[in-house]
Length: 323
Image 1 (cartoon, helix red, strand yellow):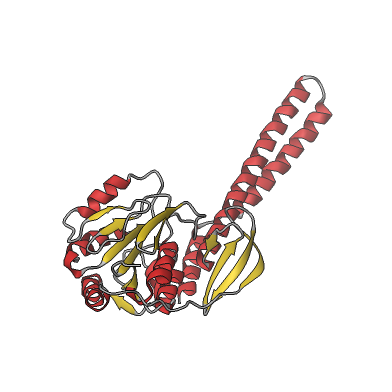
Image 2 (spheres, rainbow, N blue to C red):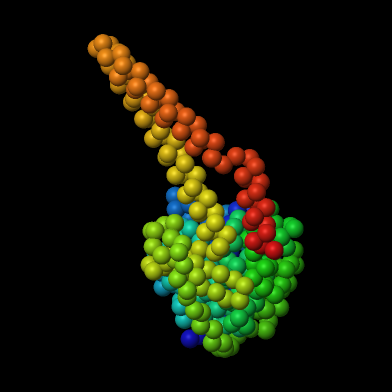
């Protein structure tokens, strides 16, 4: 393989503004290739993001295409709803299962950089929610590559940076200092063949948890203190993302139950009215009492739905997971 050193940059909420400040300080003559992964909806316009990132950028940015060569002095941005991976001297796009409920997933790109580029690969985590990128940062560091995290105290959304710090990122830097670290890395590794350290094998242990996306059984994959839950078909979740998905499933199930109980109450009241209109008063009274029971059950279900206190507790739990 003959390819330049490759640095992957991942971010989520708040990261586009960070990139707009970071990219103008990049230089093509450093000889680095850069791959940018930003969480976003599949309906968002890739061309618009490409245009935004290119404005005032010190390095040309273009949308990644399947099979595109990895070129020095150029950056690519991953399209929506696909994963971006480095394979030998080319970028590849895949529609593999979502990881951390995201596609593109930052972890997927970071893993490929670690596996293919070793010490000549780098990973940078910017502002974002939850913790996609943390497991990938750990893998890049194990392979001998560069790992940088935007200072969580500076990030607009600090979840992802804090998770990456907890995963063992080597450098925590303010935005203004990140370009200097990348330039120093480029001077050291931009030219030459990559030396890749063999990554440790990771054992999988089956759990009783089910995949939020396909309901398959999840297996736990451990890497030191890090844990990743992966199903048979490939959906993967960090503990924090899995917790958030299960919370969302609980809320969805409770709203469905509340809706069904209210519908049952309405239907039963209509049946009671028809019975009363046809002279069946005893049956109507029983139907009214049954409708009241449905409404009382609906109130109980509604009382179990998340409230402000639950939101605060969930925020504190996320912070505890990131410590």
